[in-house]
Image (cartoon, rainbow, N blue to C red; front, side):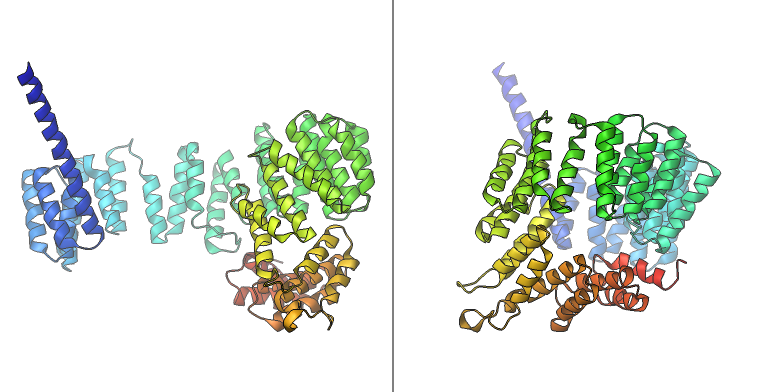
Length: 601
C-alpha cells in the first residue's frame, strides 16, 4: 500500500512541477517577446512548442520571433512541415502568407491568403481563427472576406459585429453603420453594444460628417421599418449633440407607440434642465404633467416646471407656487415643492425668515432620515444666507454623520468647506475639500477641486495677505444677493492703499479671479458693458490666463444674448475656435458661430 501511495505522490508531483516549469518558461518567453528580445524568446518558445505542438500560441509566437529576426526560411520550413502533417489546419496559410509578405513577396503572400479563405468553404472550423489572424496582421479586407465566407458556409454563424468593427478601423463609416444597424434590426438586445461602439466615432457636434451619416442611416431604417430601437438611437444621438428638442420628438413618438412609462422623458427633461436648455426641459415636464395619471409623477414634474420659471426669471413664480399648494396641499407628498419654495423665498425674494418657517413645517412631514437631511441641508443654506454660520455648520455636520456614504453627506461636507471658506477658515476648508476631490458624485468632486485650487493658488504666503479673505467675503455677499456690496469690496482691492507687507499688492496674486468675479456680478446687475470691460482686462493682462477661454465665451455670450451685437459675438466665439481648440466651450462656440453666420438659417 505504501508503494502505491509513493508512486501516486511521485507521479502528481512530477506533473505539477512540469506544469509549473512550463508556466514559468512561457512567462519568461513572453516577457522577452514583449521587450523585443526575440532571439532569447525564440529559444524558449521553440522548446515549449516541441513539448506541446498543439499549442497555437507557442507556434504563432515562435513564427513571429523568426520573422522579427529575419529567419524567414526557418519559419517557412516549420509552417510547411506543420501543413504536411495537419492539412486541415488552414489557418497556417495566413501565417505562411504573412511570412512571404514580410519578405515583400506579395504574390506568394496573396496566394496563401486565398488558400486560407477557400479552405473555409471546405471546413469552417478555423474560420474565426483565420479572420482574427488577418485582423491581427492588419489585413482587414481579408478578415472581412473570411467572416463573410464563414457566414455563407454556416447560416447560424453571425460575425456582423466583428465586420462592423473592422469597417470602423478602415474608416468605412457608412458600411460600419450599415452593419451595426442590420445587426440591431435582427436582434434588439444588441442596442447597448451598438451605442457603445458607434459612440467612439460620434461627437457632440451635430455638423460632424460622421454624425450626419449615422443620423441619415437611422432615419432611413425608421422610415422603411419603424421600430422602437430607431427612435431610441435618434434620441440618444440628439442628446449627445445637445439637441434636446429633437430628442424629445423621438421620446414622444416612443411614448405614443408604447404608452408605458414616462421614465425616458423624465430623464431627458432632467438632462435638458441640468444643461440649462430650459425650453426643451419645460416641454418634457409639461408633457408629463398633462399626460400622467400618477400624482407623485405629476408633482415631481411640476417642481421642475416651477424651478424653470425661477431660472428664467418669470414674474409669476409666487403665483405658481400658490397654485401648486392649492392643488396638491402642503403635505408629505409636496416636501420637494416646500423646499423649492423656501429656496425661492431666500435667494430670490430675500425673505429668509419666512423660508425658515416653511422649512420647519416641512420637517414635521419628513418620514425618513433622508427627507430630514434634505430639509436640514436647505435650512443650513438659509442660515449661511443670514450669517448664522455656526448653527449652519452644526446642521451640515449632522447630515454628514447621519447619512454617511450618501450623496447628501458629500454635499453637506462640501457646504462645510464652502462655509469655512466664506468665514476665512481656509485650512479647515482645504481639509474637507481634500476628501471630496475623490467624491463619487462628479459635480461635487469638480466643485471641490475648483475651490481647493482657488484657495491653494491664492492663499496668504509667509503671513503676507493675498486678498483671498476679501475675495471670499465678496463671494459670500454674492451668495447673499448683496451684489453692490460685493462689487464695492472688490473695488477696494484696486485702491492704491491696498498694499500689504513688503510692497505686495493683494492683486498681485488674485487679479484674474477678482476681475472675473466682478464681471459675473456686473452681469447679474445687468451692467453688460462694464462686465465686458472687466473681462477684457484679464486678457489684456495675460492672454494665456487659465481663464482665457471662460472669458472669451462669456464675452461672446454677452454680446450675443444681451447686447445683440452679432459681429462682436462672432469675433469672440471665433477666438475659442481658433485659439482654444481644447476648450470645453469649443462645440457650443462653433455651433453658435455658424448660426450667427446664417449656416443654420
